[in-house]
Length: 379
Image 1 (cartoon, one colour):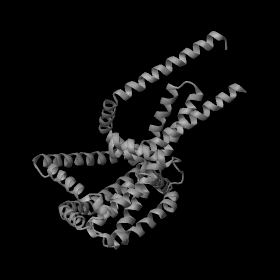
Image 2 (cartoon, rainbow, N blue to C red):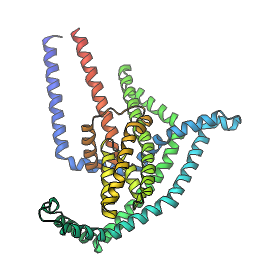
Image 3 (cartoon, rainbow, N blue to C red):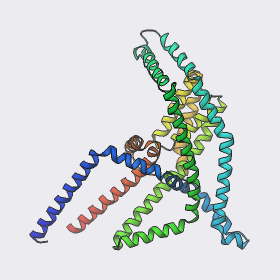
Image 4 (cartoon, one colour):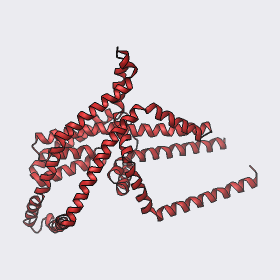
């Protein structure tokens, strides 16, 4: 490489760095507008996102059922194995939704309504305990009674008035809209499973038409396959493990006669989607609610079984279900969950970890390829 070419390359790199710095500055300067726009876009396409999530979750049973139909002795079923597999999954979904709607949802609504109605009584009991502790106690030094009075007063002022009731009504409407998006996502997932080969073929053609260089095409395909593996590992495996957590924790709490067992079991199942932190947060929430509703003795009874099950799940059950690890450090998990939850809510918290795993893997592969290219040039 001659001197002029080297100088030109140097100035091109400087200009690109300058442009990148300007883009980063403008992005940070308008971060709230950008995140608002992204949140609105995600809200619009949320049925499609739910559809993709459900498609990943139902992929394994769909494939297994399809193989059973393909081995059927009746040619009519064998030739249409994928169609009948999709119909079978659809019927199973109807049964599951019916069971949830008839059995689980009324219990959940009753538990939440009862908990909300009993909350003032529980708060009064806690305040009575805090007001009667010795002055030299650690509970007294923390001024928890004043904090609880202020927070409960703010809650009552916010919700127990016409404006608060209107806000609650809007919240109920939003929940109803989200339920509709979930149901629509279930329907979309069935179409995705039915036409998965056609969809995969479309993306292969798209990559081939955009990237003419074979090396670039190979790199993009590798990244897409890795993204697919990470999403499948996280969504399908975590989803199944979360169902196991919900069932086991609910049964455990029912055995110990803990109030709101189904609601607390649901908390354990949902927070299980967050690696490392989710199980700990779920145990803290379950014990805190049980402490308020049923006292210290009940917390002592359930704490050890909960911790034993969480250890069993983390070290035995989940590794058996999730055959490949996401290979992401706990620090990165915490950062991803906090950032995702702050800007994109609950969906952002759940999806932050697989997205962080994908981004990390892409950066690692890029750094390794850059290093190998540099060594080849030196050689």
